[in-house]
Image (cartoon, rainbow, N blue to C red; front, side, top):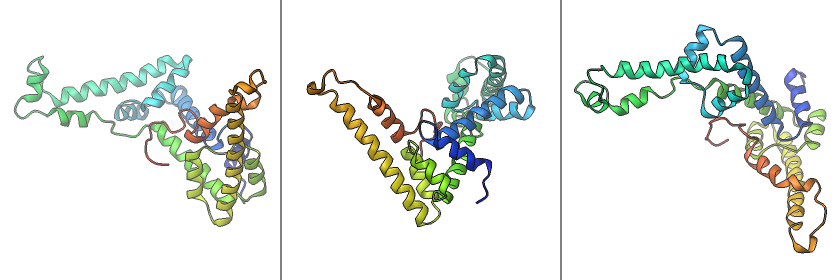
Length: 241
């Protein structure tokens, strides 16, 4: 196979804690936001996109708060989005009075429902788009090359995929060999996790009081992550994965 940078990214991610696909997709979003704030904040196209998006989605808007050295850049972008919201309201209602009820009810003026529609984002969140594109790229590579020796070895030694990304990997599987191998590896990983979770629960039994808790102590947290995906790994998406 052509061992592109994506191939080596996947191998490396399998060696880190958590779902490799979540990790890579989240990394891509972090890089996108970093580039947005440090390189493109003053570009007219960026300004226009933020206006049409009404800002990023909820999840990625709050993620911007982690960029503590970029408050001015964030302010510039969100000032544009806020200005667009106000402009949309002003265009929809010719202001003869300060009473909103009269404005929206006046003959020939826009209804409240129509104004609400105009206030909806007119473009998708760019961070969510980046998340989607990266996720599809990594799932496609795994689906095509799960049986590759290095990929298989890295996958077996990893904490496995989260359930949403395992479903995606099965859908992206190229041939029964790749699909069958992924099912076998993932089942073994989840079975091991279930054993750790059962051991952790046993430690709450009075008969085991005082026994030290090892790696199984985090099994409940890892189980949540394996079934739901890593924190914020799916942005605002609610559709089936």
